[in-house]
Amino acid sequence: MKHLIILQEGVEMSNCKHVHTEGQTHQLLVNNLEVAYRSDTVLKDINLSAHCGSSLALVGPNGAGKSTLLKSIAGLIEPKTGRITWAGEDNVKCRGGEFAYLPQHEKVNWDFPITVQGVVEMGRYSQLGAWGKFTKKDDLAIERALDLMEMNGELAQRQISELSGGQKQRAFIARAIAQEAHVLLLDEPFTGLDREHTANLSRLLRKLTKENRLVIASHHDINTLTDTFDQILLLNRIVIAMGECRDTLTEENLNLTFKHASHV
Image (cartoon, rainbow, N blue to C red):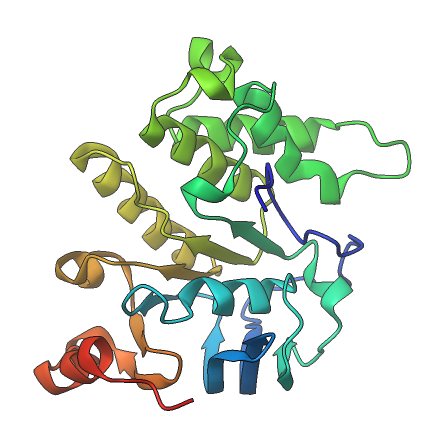
C-alpha cells in the first residue's frame, strides 16, 4: 500500500515523556525479533542494540528483511515474537513523536496534491499543541529542514509531483528532519540523489548523530558505508554480523550475506 508518509501508520501519535538532557543517551534494543507475513518468516532471531549519537546501516540483498526491520522498529508491523524497547519502554505510542520513518521512494503516492512545504510541515504534526497551530518554534524547525536539504525558496512552493526523483527524496528527508525526532529510520535514503546531494546527505547524517540522534538506514552501496555510518548490520533474514564497518565488512561476512541461503 502506498502512503504519503509517514510516521506510524495506524498508530496513535503522542508526545513521548522522554526528553534528552545533556549527557543522556537513549538506547534502542531489539531482542529475539521474529516477523512473518502469513506463513513466510522474513526475519528471525534478530538482536541488536543502538544508541543516540550513532548511525547504523542495514545491508543485505533484496528480500533480506531490511525494510521489514525498519517498519518493525517504527511500530508499523506487529512482530510475531520478540521485543523492541526504546529508552527502557516497549510502548509503541511512546515512540511516535521520537521516531521519524522515511519509506522507500516507490512506496509513496507522489500524485498527492501537496507542496514541498506541506510535506515538510507534516513533520511537525506530532509536536502541535492543543490548538493544532504552528508556533514560532515549528516555523523555525521547518525552515531549518528546508535549508539543510536545499529545498527552500521557490522550490518549497512546488507540487511534490513536479519534482525529480532526487528532489522528492530530499523533501521527505527534510520532513524527517523537521520532526526533530531522536531516531531517524530511513529506507534507502540515498536513492535518486546525484553525487553532490549524496555527499551533502552523508554530511548531514553525520551532523545529526553529533546532535545526539540515532540514524538507522538501509543502504546498498558498500563502497560508501564508512563515509556515513559508524556501524553496519549485515542481514539476510537473520543477522549475519554486526559491528564497526571496518571490522564487519570482511569478505567472509559479505559472502555469507549475499550468498547465504536463509534457513528460517
